[in-house]
Image (cartoon, rainbow, N blue to C red; front, side):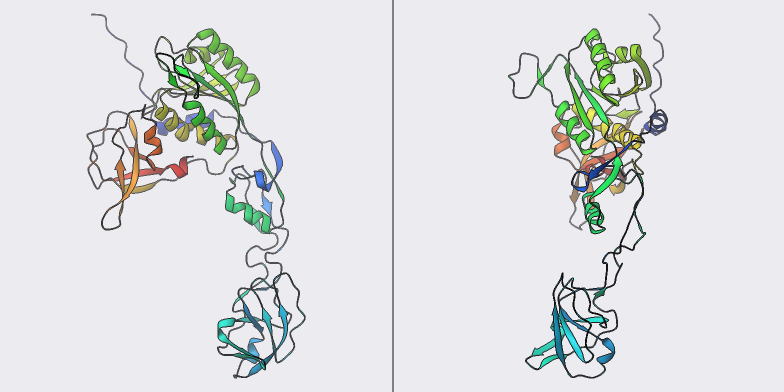
Length: 408
């Protein structure tokens, strides 16, 4: 019997990530864009406030602006003026109060606002039923943002709520890192475009739509290179073209060891792989390297494997390339509601849903079919639970949980 050569040891993901990041180029180019298209982009330079927010003291509620020192005894005050939001009132006369509304600037001389529920109004004026302290119910100038304050550091990734902060500081545009151009290649003779009839032996191409959506969430400019058949020459040509038009190349399929898997061989001929085969499940055949000097990521063809390797490895890599201050997801510890046999040599990423027990505790519920070909499992679950190698899971054991909200 012919002796078989030992298989190379699979690389743990904890070793693969720093190796991967160490080989990536860092982008420095920036562009200035309107706020309405800045969500999800990486801030290119530190952003400072040029004004106070609010720019002056304003009322925090509907009521009456007063001089708090005059409220030492109950009496009826004359109402000298009415100030709505967007109006500038006159200085407050001594012995009077001003009818004021939420967001209106406090008149000069006033130092507090009495809420309207604590005022008895009549034709004679306003009787203050409960005194207030100086500064009560008032938003002081700069309470939200102070002039010169650092609003966002370079490398921050902008969220929808951040748009409100920038707009409140009077900013209509912001400098962000330019978008990465990502060439997307999907390989396999068996793939058909959705909407077209399937031929015998074919399946619909689901990875392209899924990866396109994931890349859009990262504000990448996606260059669709189309479906590529299982042919070495064609694969080589498409990879070469992709390197000419994009900063990064992402492919799915063709990185395993089958006779029809040509992506790895083509990449080796055009540059080479830095990483291949990781100790993770699903996603073992993940590959990373260079094609004609451009960064290449090779994802497995099975939809779950493609998704898992993208969110765990490609997503943080793309954020890192754009200078993001935080590229990795935040996980939480939650108890499992399931039991499982000892895991193998690879770290497993199990699709799980969040469920609540009778005591209101949140538990992780395992999806019943963990096959890497069951794409619906990604839609029916809330995230990934991490099971380390050689680990038996019993109900109640704490597992690291990565919510999809942190991964996409």
